[in-house]
Amino acid sequence: MPIFEGYFRRFSWPIALAMLALMAIGITAIWTVERAVDSRDVAGCTAKQAAFAVVGLGAFLGATVVNYRRVGQGSYALFALTLFLLVAVLFCPARKGAHRWIQLGGPVQLQPSELAKLVFIVALAWYLRYRDSYRRLGGLIVPFAITLVPMGLILREDLGTSMLLLPTLLVMLLVAGARWRHLLIILVLGVVVLFGPVPRPVDEPLFERQIDKYDAWQIGPFVRYKPREFRREDGSIDWSKRAVMPVSYARCQIGEGPIFDLQPLSVAMITLKGHSYQLARVESWLRQEDPRIRATAGFQQHNSMLMLAAGRAAGQSDRAAMAEYLRMVPEDHNDFIFSVVGARWGFAGCLAVLVLYGIICLFGMDVATSTADAFGRLLAVGVVALLAAQVFINVAMTVGLMPITGMTLPLVSYGGSSLVVNCLALGLLVNVGRRRPISLAPPPFEFGGDGI
Image 1: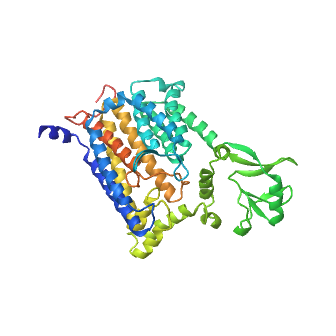
Image 2: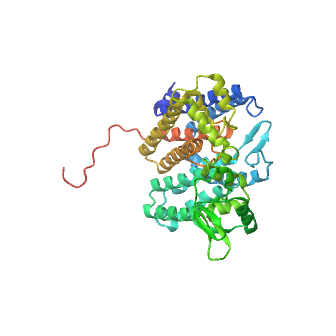
Image 3: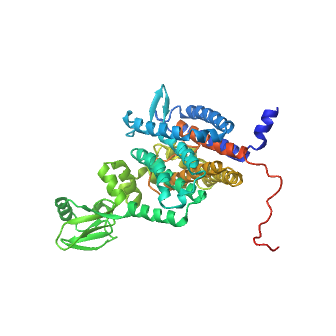
């Protein structure tokens, strides 16, 4: 039929097929966990994920049909609605210690932070499409406000999702034409805010009791042997005789004054807000070699790496052994699904998943570079940047290169909101590709100047 002929003429098949393959891998991995782990949290997840995939596929197809510029025209209203939902979710009942979901009725739930990722990209792309104010340092205030307002709301309960917005913003600004030196200034300021040292007083009575208890003990990168004397860390001290100290650059004392820890500003802010679980994730990542940490706050990340190692090249052949590994990591059907892929299909399976993401990013950038519409280009770049950042953070978290952030693996991890929103994002990406101008010939060489 002519209508379908026109629909598929500029359809980005590699993106669609890679998306379907990732969804199939995710459903199979979740089924592997459900079969091996006898848990109420995992029971029935395979069927639910398959239903989510059907809904996501419908969302993908719908997003490819509607003109993406109409979505842009309503982006500010969607952005305002998303901010309202991010505030409303704070008043909803907590689930697993976090306010992330709004109950819509029955088993249907909405995670506003997932929706905010996509709406943020659309609103930012619509704002940047024909402006040049961001070529000046002062003109970056509005783009950063569009980013930091939802980021601040998301950060209250979802550290992982909030980490995606800034990298996406910087990539979109760079493609839009922002100056390198302005972005570099902002990056330097961001590093100062995140890692700048601030003093935090130490409880001296507790400090003295610890001194009496241990002959020598670890205090950040230093060791104190006797009152008012600090020396370099002694690596020969047994772990059982070391005190677990707060995350800090060093413990200091000026003369006979009070003792204080030099902490990164971001860590101090987390401590003041009382988000102990976020701080525990950072501490467990920094002290992965401590066996006490592995047995407590760091056991999930440590066991995740064991699962990946158990898969070897082609996957764990012993089903009983693999089932035992799968039982070691809670939420392995969600945040740690990449570890399940590694245990089930080994290095080959992990590589296949990364190649599929690479295909989406590669053809997504082809869409961005070949479209003549500024909004379409920025929208495509934003979707690709968001996907790449999410994959990088999740995989780095799984292999121990970053702290646990609660980040899902796009299209693979269990979860309806995440899956549907990612399908919507890829649908918009394909939508931009469908409306690219048709090139009748390759572009000519541009030698520059007047000569040949």
